[in-house]
Image 1 (tube, one colour):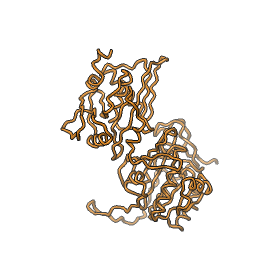
Image 2 (cartoon, helix red, strand yellow):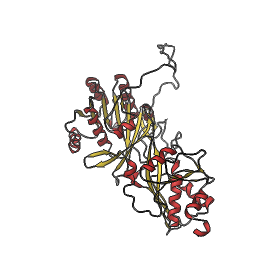
Image 3 (cartoon, one colour):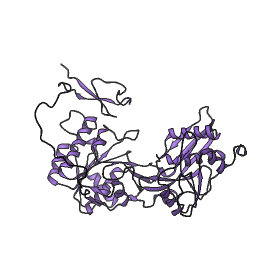
Image 4 (spheres, one colour):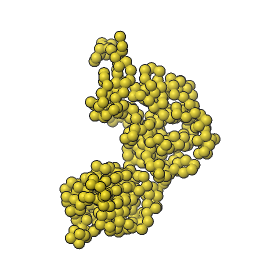
Length: 458
């Protein structure tokens, strides 16, 4: 009699008894794959009458000391980690292929080893000779990091238990193979089991584990989403291959702030930290040009200035193009609709291209006003004042809403030489620090104040 098979969705981890084109749980298409024999035990089996041991309980007022941390000595990496590496923690690092994940972790391993930690680097994708060759290229061959190339999870855990390192780096979790799971490496079951074993081992033995995770074409870490719930910290390594800048972003951190970022620059000798990313992102900005706007944003806890560029041109086709790099395409459509409905600025029959310079990805709504300013500037062929920064959220009614950390945005802009800011109307008086604050209450008033009345523009 043939065994029943289990089918699992690689996007959400839901299990099914038969294959389907679309997952009923999350709605994803072509993500259901065969895993292995389906358990024939009773559904909903209880734990029975056997008693377990009682749990020690405490109250919320109990004061526990902060977890000990070890700093890497790389300011950008320590910032993203929340102040350093925490003992007995599990971290997951994801990123596109070839973006520099292995380079970053090899440099981090060398830094931690020089700071007194015992570090083991285990590669499941490369041989020891390949890792050593990269270390020589980066000038790290004399660092006291122990290397191994293995994919068998049982052998890896035995080695870690024997060596008792302070930090273990697994590159990558998709290559690990647990002999207790009847499926191929990289499958949902294998990734889930390997991540669970490594995370539990780190908690029991008091060591830190960093796991590298591959990403899907949508940019999410491949495998079941439960892996991100297991670990303490999830980091994404972002960037465009055509740019030298790389962004390390914390999307989850139990020991520090989420959405914190670290900025690095890819050089011939590896990744170099960028201590003043605002100045670097604006370093190649030339003379004021239509469609160019400086946005004062916040990434995590740090203010960051970047350039938003827009280009509007007549469309040669019946369906105009809407191309976006570094921002949300759906939000661009919303801004275009508000400009047409509330301000009378139409983009019908026009191709619209929007780009965030330097390969940075922006997700906060505070960029709405800067995007709208860039679009109108490109359409009207009129440059904004070069000394001004722009920020603010736009509602569907066309009103401008204040955003958080206004004072930090203004301080960063003033530090880089900007003398004025175009922003929403504030409910209470804001310290300007010597900057000219041009406060607007709605988008129509902003367009008229900056680019002139509608009749004059037409």
